[in-house]
Amino acid sequence: MTGMTDISSTPDTIAVIVDCNCFLQLRDLKDLPWGELFPAVKRVEIMVTPSVVTELDKKKVDGKDRARNRARAAFRLLDMASEAEPMRVLLRDEPIIVALNLPEIPPTDWHQHPRLDPTKPDDALVSQAVDLATNFPKTLLSHDGGPRLTARRLGLAAKNVPDAWLLPDPVDDDRKQLQKLQRENEQLKSRHPSIVAGWGSADKPLDCLTIERLVVPPLSGEAIVAAIALCRSKWPHAIGTMRVGSGFFIGDDDTSGRFDQNDYQRYFEKWQQWADGLLAFFESLPRRVAGTTRFASADLWFENTGGATAEGLTIDIAVSDGWQLLADQKTVDDIALYPVALPERPLTPFQQDHANRASKADDVSRQFRHLVAPPPQPRDPTGFYWVERPGYDSTRGLYRCEEFRPKRRNDDVIWLWPRGNPPLNGKLVVDIHGSNLSEPLLLKLPLAFADRAADWGDEDVVAALDPSLAEIVASVTAAGTAVG
Image (cartoon, rainbow, N blue to C red; front, side):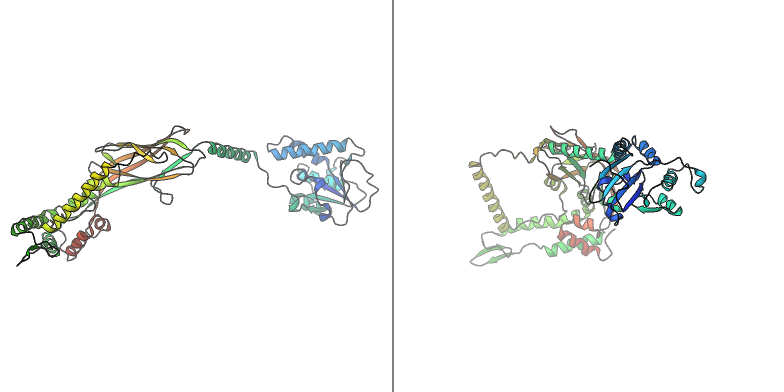
């Protein structure tokens, strides 16, 4: 509500001289609960001094949106007051009358205010507040401590602005622009796929992959002799037994009795070859350990954080010359023979017969399944399939998913085999692209291949051995005659 009233007709009045920030930092003057700050008054006459008008005029072109807009809104009130007589506009008439005034204040005689500095806007406000002539009490209202302290030294009452009267913290232009960009980015993500990826895992990122080939010392002659003796005692050859009226039996599990002495002789010769081969096996054990520990894997993860399906998502993998990509764990096992195990022991004729029958039954089962082969199933569009599967001596592989859907995460393992000898450096590169991605994603992982000297008790060496072989090696190396 706006209008005019006779300021001499209402009792219990107070004149409140406001500073510039009362217009910039407070809620609208007409909406403030003046009764909380001045409980006994019925009328608040807000006085705007010339110094405040000057400061507001400067703020009309301020670089910050809120200060500029609030200053311009203040001038609309000042213009309304200046067009009225006596330069006063009514802001509210209940429950407390609130009016805004542009009082006539003579130019400051600074000789009358020797403690004030004419170059300081705060001191100009205080001097004009002191010089303001009113028929009722007056109080300076300011959120700044400086003007309040100065006013009180000069005998003028001063009040601080309650925190509840302040506007919320402004959102400046930079924050507005950032929020706008964030909103636009979220909208964009909701309409398009967005792929993020990395090496390792969320809690353990990988910035370089180092493959360590374990170099263990050769076993001493005494250790090898002890290891062979352990193997021969742990896995002795089966005994042939003739039972009158029942037949010839080879081994405790033989229940057939249909084998003869010649069968036993052939079996024993194979077992003897196995036992004789243990010497070469234990002598070659350091080389076998080094060979099986030159393989390693890099963990790769990627996720669609956008709001749309990534179509034809393609993972293109390449590795430096001197390195080889392997398709999967099975390929690694076929090449690396991991873990390192003792040579396979020969079966007795009875055991071999059972194995042959089981193998034949499996062959027949496979042949039967081929006769009634299930109808071909269409590929799952959400699955990943090799487009270029790494083969022998491959440095590149490529696989694809036709529909990599929103919020889906995929964790992969890329197997690597350095073909050269240490030290050898390289790089693993993954190019992730799709038909509707805004741009491809390129990840690079430095690679290193190095030798690491280790003893037979090293946990990585033990892990590279078959448990039964690890037990034998631990037994023969515990006596201190491990290496020659």
